[in-house]
Image (cartoon, rainbow, N blue to C red; front, top):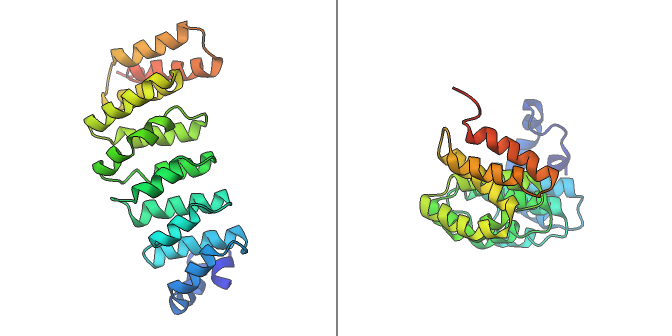
Length: 222
């Protein structure tokens, strides 16, 4: 319990307290703590963090269990752990579950878990990534854009084909990604921005289009 409740756990003085205890207890104690739905959420989050940092992450069975937890914070921390313990080849079926979660924060953590993934994983997740580009939550869209920027050309085109027909929100996100992949003055990005600015669209979408216009002009730099 002291390991899970230690204040300021990332500080040097706190580490001198909980790290020796964690090593002595071993991973099993923290696996049980992370899976225990009766424990306070903060203790479970710390158990996940300790397992990730000190014991090579969570095993696939526990990740699958935590992905179904009724507590969004636990699901989000499990997604975080997946991205740090299986960085290059995170389990696609688990990522798909996180990316389809009803809580935006969980989706965002799942997208951030994709940032180190190899290109095959990115290709396998083309559908969920396309959907995330049009998400209602701004932070989810931003995380999706960061992930899609990393995709190879074939995967990017597949994502674009799926995302573009879903609406202008996804279209703007795709244009931001395109601009990031093609530096400097960009006619395609400018065209998307102007279509939104001159069309009958909500003010929030037009606000995004103004920023897109700046990006398409090379962020108004030299």
